[in-house]
Length: 415
Image 1 (cartoon, rainbow, N blue to C red):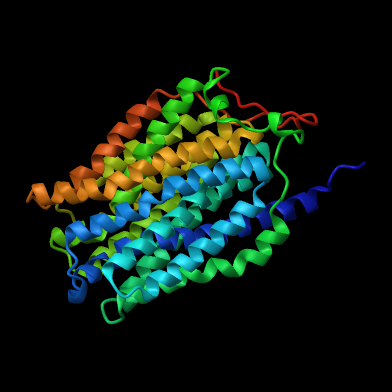
Image 2 (cartoon, one colour):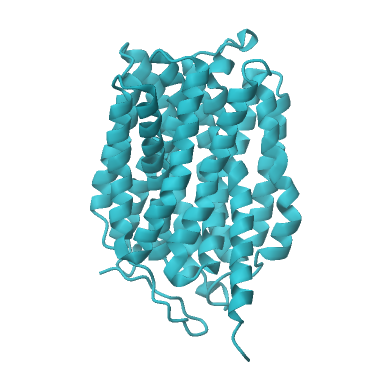
């Protein structure tokens, strides 16, 4: 039987990327939505929201994510990518519609928990789907392009907020998050239904203990620590950056401009980093992301010209979201195909605990310390700790382009 023609393979890979980007675009919109509407929500008198409320909503959203990540990752290796991805897309669309029409703060918080379950499921599912279909020497680039859609979605959220708030009631911005349901037919048609890797019985499929055997244990624990810190950094900044900028003396419009620059930097800059990562420097690029985030967030806390602060905000976005994307890329490169969903699911599931802690941690820091710089310094802590964890990882290189024999997985190169 002849090999698949190269143009056909290229079209298939382009289709995988396009679908993944569309899914993660709305995922990014959903992630950034709370940060975008935060100042307007706190000014909505019927709900009596405060800074603590904003932190609570960010944490409640994140609270659902570990459930989605772990269940989706496990199901993807046991049942294939299609069914759990379809279920996650339908679930998150329904949750965003419910958030649009929630009549009270308590019910709104409940819808955010449900949204978090869906958001948690999408990252490991889409990451595994993209990595499965990408050329071995371009996996980080393909994954970065797909995950970059998170930043594009975040930009769209901030742009809509800049255009519509505070004139439009903030809840209407959540209705956009229902759009993924339109992608269900494409998911049913394009996403494989069978598990990836060995096609035998259940004994051939991924088991949680395998994350800690065959020399994987130390690296798995480090991945979990890096994922925790990256999620704490991402979700604290996405939930709090506009409010922290307002506390520093900027108006709502200017603070959303910084969020737009933050997300644009995360999307555009990550592509260059992925090219370097695919040339054997994945760990170095990941470490650089955390360091860049820490430095940029410190500069944002200092008085600088507006244009310079916008540029630094873009660098902060590159380091923050780019660092998270590279942590995911490290996990997809390290774990073999049949274990990839489980490795990503549990790694991101533990990471979501950081997403839970991050927004509330910043809320406490901004309440305890009256300085306008408190929020920025709080952002910096997980960036510095994340860099320390990543420094302990082994070197992770791109897998060999050799096509594995039937029933085998291509192993990562981990000296």
